[in-house]
Image (cartoon, rainbow, N blue to C red):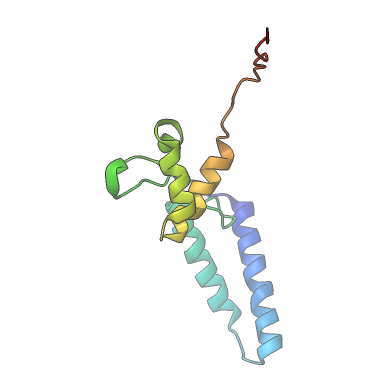
Length: 121
């Protein structure tokens, strides 16, 4: 467990609790804030977080349709048109956003080719 990340988490939690208390006038027990922050930090560490509130990126797996079981990164390689459709039309916001991010991260690279004009006789 990263001690600096835990320290940063606790300092932030205490600062926020003081701000909330000042704004609302509701008393907040600093000891409870520290306990909850440590518990949250430990849980996040067990789940693969880095302690700064950021989870590592996990590939989103499609759980429906003809590409069930594939990640969006795989779709970028095997069926880009379906990935485009998901980015524009999916009813699930999380999938729309993730599909757009995968498309941005995997741009289509094409060679710059000059096609000569036909010679007219």
